Image (cartoon, rainbow, N blue to C red; front, top):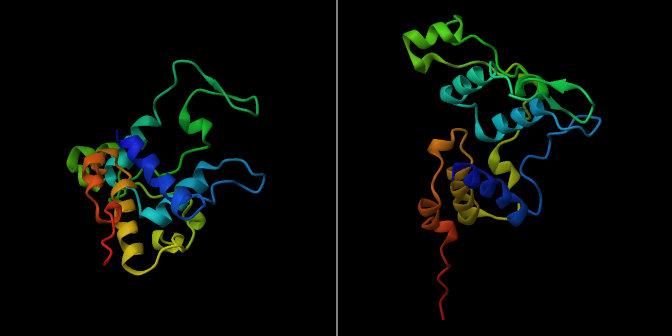
Length: 173
């Protein structure tokens, strides 16, 4: 499943580096912050593709069948409220509402992240210190097949099994 592939990709950092990939996802009071999490994802993986923004905009309108109470006691009816959204604006690259842009061309969907000032100045390669050279590049290539915004474009387990990083090293006798 694509979610499992994502989780395995994130887990690789625990196994190879001994630390979490997404480390700057808590605010000053040590509470989880979806804004900070998305900002770090954008820094490490690049911006989400239009299809992910479209899905986000659609899900903003969805109300849970049963409201959810967070640890602070407040009851929320939507994921957007629960995670303190919105995170992306509702306008596409032409400045028109995304719902209108969809009728013209679905490639125009590109909501902008509302908290660009929170995006750290780091890249995925900056998070790997344990590996060097070709081994580091192979590891990053493997990870980039797993850590893809859109679940349908992630590599499958079968595709990943043949990746050079996972193959045994040839040693001379």
